[in-house]
Figure 1 (cartoon, rainbow, N blue to C red):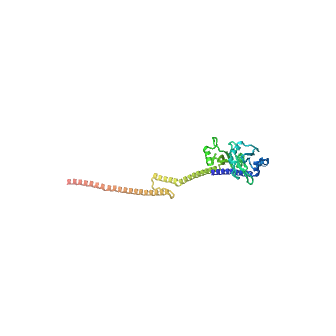
Figure 2: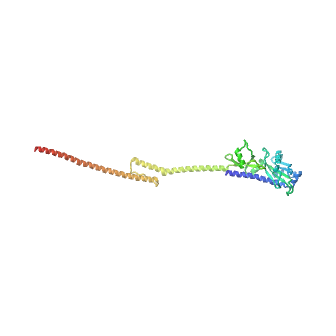
Length: 365
């Protein structure tokens, strides 16, 4: 989203330059398609200068300079005004040399409607210019082309401020050069030349989108920068931060709720279950039962253990009964033994005594 916003703003800035080109073409055609201009190119006269080329006239249409070339590509008249200094100035000869060196592009025209507009950076240390070259013809566009009218504006800080006020953007331009002191890396510089657009965050609150502006001959010449606050990015960070906080609180609450639920429905019941089993083990009392409420696995386990305890208690009771019965039988056997065996022993003893008595009685008899 942030890249799309910056890209859209770059497009707005480029469109503003295109509107500037259209404005220069309209002004150039308005002045060059005029009998007075055609006559002035052939015969310089003071009346034309006084009526049309004064400071106020050019300031009203926001044109910093006008160059009049005749049909032999010779500069017959020029006028340059600096509206900040409010006076006429002269431009370096290198600008005129640049125009003459590119006369095939700027001063030669294939037809009456031909015009050439764009940026000129004739010297890296000088202010870039926005210029438009249009053929000078009569009002009815009949007859030969009488020369070329070059009109233009300074692409200075004041003009950029004007662009910023219209587009509500922060716009910068710099010569498209790469050196060791450049704010752009070599890879970034290459990407801009290749893709014509590059977006680079400066810090957490500011981002800049870069694009290239071609000069009047179509060669990339200026680096256009459009800055923007990272409102979308920071809003996204806030949303993510709030989301993380919400997830943390939700997770923490779920953990606490899970612990409470486990303690109430599992852990505490297992504790009661373990305690009951321990009491049965310690007191060896199978008559005790495990009291677990509910209808889940733990309660069913408690019921099964209670059933097992009842079974063990019954078996234990049966064992006790069998032991008691066996003990009684043993005691009965002991009594029988005492009665029968002792009696037999006494009978044997008695028989012995009788025999002895018989023997003694026989001897006497």
